[in-house]
Amino acid sequence: MPAWEMNVRKVIPYTPGEQPDRAGIIKLNTNENPYPPAPGVARVLQGMDAGKLRKYPDPAAGELVSALSERYQMPKEQIFVGVGSDDVLAMSFLTFFNGDKPILFPDITYSFYDVWAGLFQIPYECQPLDGEFEIVTKDYLKPCGGIVIPNPNAPTGAEKDLQELERIIAANSDVIVIIDEAYIDFGGESAVRLVSQYDNLLVVQTFSKSRSLAGMRIGYAFGNEKLIKYLNDAKYSFNSYTMNTVTIAMGVEAVRDEAYFQETVGKVVATREWTKGELHRLGFVFQDSKSNFIFASHPKCQAKKLFEALKERGIYVRYFAKPRIDNYLRISIGTDEEMKALVAFLDKYIGENLWLN
Image (tube, rainbow, N blue to C red; front, top):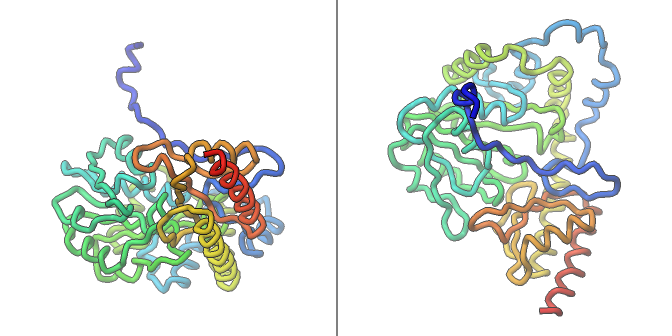
């Protein structure tokens, strides 16, 4: 090993879902929204004066913060924006988790949490989900350095009752509790209303799922004014101009078109509920998802073989070769046509394989 390599910070990186560059595929592996963003977003792209790009963007993303403030009836001083919720979460880990005690998060969850903990050298303990893949409240009622809970959880899609989350927040007043609500718009009850009651609570959301802007990277957080100031202090010490001018303008348009937002979310939810019924009919088992995906297992079909068969057919879903979940597939909700194609393939595949068995 070269001498210089002794001082390199080494981490095991997050593994993102495949982004296949093939024509005619059905992409159900990264929880993207199958519908385009609000019409105003396209108008921003068409009407943007390129001359504006010679200047730095507003480091505070003031227009976007104002739009979010109006939409959520939250003071601007209690809103933080970043380049996707990953950026917001990473900055939160860096800012708030600097004690000697381990932070806590579930063992089956978003796999970026342990990556950030490793990158920033934060001690952590994974709390096991129960046999039904539910978060166990009592596991988070103990001394710790902080808590991160995704709600609904990923990859399971299960929602934690808000009253139980409040028990966890209230019992950990000496540390920061982060509720990661990337999928909250698809049916869960948000913890945003608790922000005014608990100064140790940070609620993180994203434009990537319900607002169809995964390609633009916009995330945001709600918290006590002091928490938001600490986040901005860390951000400005790292990179003042994290969000570009075009993204800010597009984000504003996406927030302001409430009718389109509700229509798109409604379509995804309706298709999800139809898909649940079809998967049940085919013998799959899964928790009741409140997200834009379903985490499903078939007791008579190996998930890895099914994943490979789907991929060969041009249908991409997500498979995790990890303990306890290696016989599950995470299936993002696409359009009605895409989900019908998925179900038709599964119907044929399962019928053939059960006959062979």
